[in-house]
Image 1 (cartoon, rainbow, N blue to C red):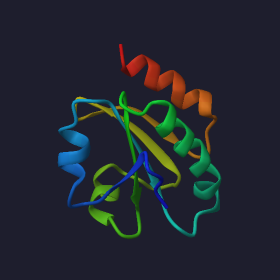
Image 2 (image 1 turned 135 degrees about the horizontal axis):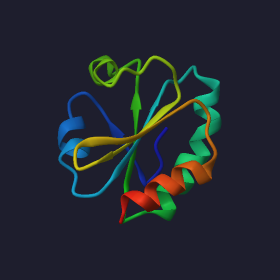
Image 3 (image 1 turned 30 degrees about the vertical axis):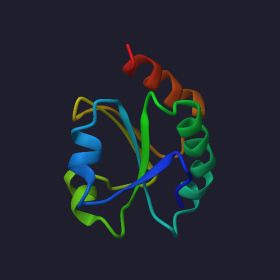
Image 4 (image 1 turned 90 degrees about the vertical axis):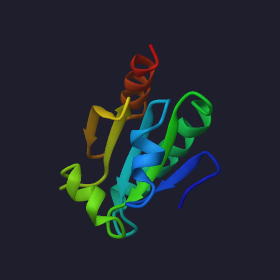
Length: 110
């Protein structure tokens, strides 16, 4: 599931890891059975490696973490949300291109 640069976020650690993070956080809401989620995984891994130390990247398994998924209105997966300062900065629904995430992350670091 997660690579060395991709953290696993859960209902239990979401507030500490994401909402209280000093860095922007890119969160991939996914599920094991979701084929588009699997197709997105290499892009998320690549971004996590490229932005290591600048942006925190992680995944939330929507089946195992219903509370967070409901709180952020995840009705379709994959959904990727960029958090900055504990707030939703940008939300991507569906399979997206790597450049979409890079543009949002670059803007969030300014």
